[in-house]
Structure formats: structure tokens, C-alpha cells
Length: 254
Image (cartoon, rainbow, N blue to C red):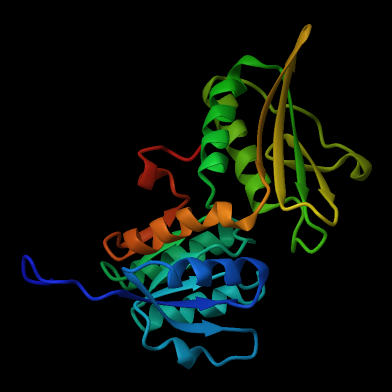
């Protein structure tokens, strides 16, 4: 720890997936922050060893690469902020085991969406869920999105399903046909992938004679940067595995 009154050196950060759409925006955000230092910006073919100087590794790569990256970072005692999607319960359990084996070592944040609006929309949807018999989710994103449904839509569906279960409700629907979308914990999710979109999520609730829409729109990837930087600054003092940013905003995810 620095002495009282002394100037603390910038936190050293490496970004994996730095040349992707999201990674490039995050790199610019780090470079614009006086308390952070971008020590490595790695693309797909760059060796991970270039990130050795970092204290925090930020991962915006691909579901096929993220687990190898996480293991590499944890084996070297580095803190992790993961924005890459594709984390199901099995992957989270594996990551938890790696983190536990090194306790009370590095902190890890796995975040489905770094937007404050997404976090609040998830909270609001969970609040509304027990009061409506019908609920479905519209999941719109750009044509190069790696998965459908998106990680954000999955987290919304899980939050709604948890809230309905706590209130004693039943799943919203039977398994729909392939033409009408996926089913996530009993919640129908309809994914659209089109050029020109970023991320747009709508949770539709309905009952007799009325409809409630909980919606958020990310029109630009800069919307995610404040949340990424918040996680980067927090993770060094937050050992263990954390899913979502709720604790950083005094909110519980879902």
C-alpha cells in the first residue's frame, strides 16, 4: 500500500481482444483514464505473454478462447474482468474452482453486460415478474453477435424466472417451436441479428387488457465503458468470483 499522501501509480491493465469492436472502445477508455495504464493490447494472434506486466486482464475475446485466457491469467495471479459471453453454469463452476484453488488470491468479475441501464432493466424486470402471467423477451443485436440469445437476454430471463419462482409462479410457457425462439428457464426469448444494431433488449409483460415493457437500448459501445472501468478499479480489492456488477452499484443482479 502507498504511504498516506503519496501518489499511487496507475493500475496496469491488459486487454485481450483489443482489436474487436468492444475491445477497441475499452482500450480508448483506459488510455483516457489517469489512474489506469494500458500495458498491452492483444489481438487474436498475439502471445499472452505480452500481458505479463499487467495486474488486471480484461477479456473481450470469444467464447472459444476465454477459458484458456482465464486459466492463464489466474495461474499468474492476475485479476480478471471478463466481458466475453458464453458462461453457462458449467463454465462458472470451473472458473469458481480455479479461483477457490488460489484463494484468497485474484478477483474475477464475469459480467453479461456492463451497462448501468442493463443492470437496472434486469432489476426492474425482476420486480415486475411476479405480477404478470405472460412474459417474453425480445433480443436484438448486430449481425456479428457470437451467440443467440445474447448473454444479456439470458441474464434477463434468469432474473425473471428466479423472481417468478420466489413468488410461487410457474414457467411462462411450454417449450416453443424453433420458429418462435429459444426457451431460457421457461422464458421465451426471440433473437434478431441485423446490421446497424448494437444491443436492444425488451422484456414484455402482459395480463388482461394491458402490457408492460421494460426496455433498454445501447446505441453505442461507449455505453459499456464506465462499467468496465468501474470493474477494473474494483477487482483488485475484491478477491473471489463475482457475476455481474450489482455489488458495485449497491444492487443485486436480478
